[in-house]
Length: 276
Image (cartoon, rainbow, N blue to C red; front, side):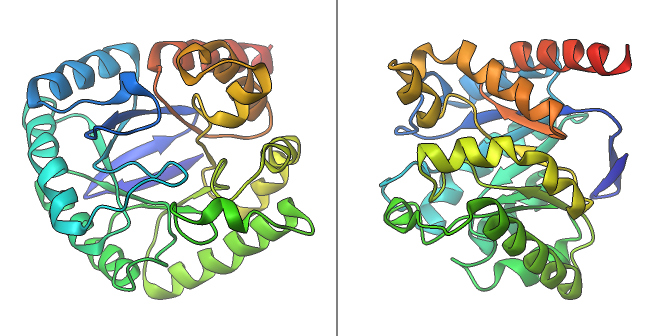
């Protein structure tokens, strides 16, 4: 069991949880996850909470391979009002902000977010780690090489599992020394990883339990699934469910997904299987 202190509110991870993805973007890889009006965001947030999402993850720019980089002020214009609106309308919701900018993280937390989800592990904005420590909120630590613009050119490993694990061990220690108390670890599926790397990480996922942190699995509708199936992101819900099931059986504690209802059902079934 893990407890995460989100601005004075405890998020208890005593069973696997779901993090619902809400993208305030025009260009995220999965079209149905894009929400560009406050009303649309609130409708999606309400449905995700009804379906059982424990966390709502709000992002203002696409981080798919080769995506266009948005500067902090432009990202802030996208996410701040939606976070404020969700916090006002659903004060019980735990909100995370998906950003690699310290400025966005700070203003998002002031607006109601309680978790910072940074794909860069602090490598893009050098102020991020110190900012999160001062905010005293949980931090999602993810493995990635390079940036979303060039990461797939850096997908080279002698042993992907051991290298990702080693990175997370050392970086987690750095974060603790910097004053970040609660850390969620994410191996970074799809970020500077080939299809083969993603499946190898999935096979070896249970080794990440030695991190003694909640393990986040972010594989929802990603290309390694739909390319393997010969389909598209729009037709990859079943594949996502299969991979999430494998992840849960190997220790995943948080499923970051576009489809909350199906993920919650997956958790119920796997939990019943394990408790039987």
